[in-house]
Length: 368
Ligand SMILES: Nc1ncnc2c1ncn2[C@@H]1O[C@H](COP(=O)(O)OP(=O)(O)OP(=O)(O)O)[C@@H](O)[C@H]1O
Ligand SMILES: [Mg+2]
Image (cartoon, rainbow, N blue to C red):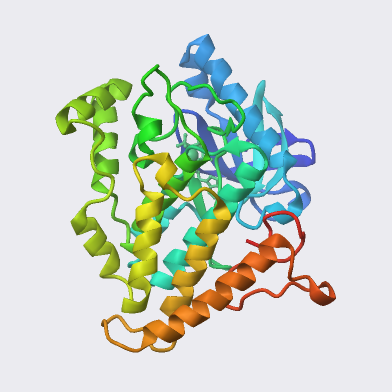
């Protein structure tokens, strides 16, 4: 049996969980008989065949992922996969990560559509995770179901795979990166001067696409499918073909997609949920929310509207007034918590419906 030795001890490999061009993930025993972990190794076979520049990119990407995960504080890891150990094997970087129950794509393919309140709770958790990435000075740029891990026992999701991270302060347009099916227009279509002018709002677009996917039980936006297909057929050149075919960027959210989305929601939640979805999926980054707190408030209001006692799937008079009141109270408590205003008696006044995390820090994003 193969054994990988990292800083904290020996990890016997048990079975391969997943593999890609870049990485291979194994379930492995923990050191000294501790619980199993997920070992992420750079794919040695592909590495041997890759060009030197590609090899260097893979190693740099793994090293940057390790450095990012190491820089997190324990309270940051509520919705980000935890790095337990790291080291080198056969001259390549290795990560030992907490073992979760597989990724969201697999989860959604074997489950019925999520209850809407869970879909928005998971969207809120991913918003928190992205807020952490942004807080540490990075753009994530690869939000997609395969990079979201599910913890079935706790019913939560965690963000993984930080190899695509780019610094927020590197303002110049960059080379193509990420996954075509889950990209904002500015990440898929080159800027006028060349390169891709992404920012943290590019992550918010992907959050919108993922929210749509969660609420509709695994549907992808037709905009995203078109970009994915164009990339499969012509790589980055596919973007030009798509622009020519649509006389510009294809619409990011169609009327029948809005209808499919709202059909899953109780009447009271339709307006705030649609406002959030349209905002996140705005083709122009300037039209998207500017900050995680804004998204968090909207999500909190949506969840309050869904959970209000009178919220049923059928539209009808009644629930809106009470719901709006509850939502406003929750949103205001959430804003207080985020601003560090709710620390009376050493305890934050956290809204009951919100998944706001443990109040471990008054300054960070732990409250969001
Ligand atoms: N900690 C973990 N626990 C359980 N499964 C995991 C874990 N980390 C990764 N996986 C599984 O391995 C897959 C690939 O992981 P990850 O995205 O980190 O690697 P990657 O090589 O960068 O992938 P890709 O290049 O396809 O984006 C995930 O989609 C998931 O199915
Ligand atoms: Mg991945």
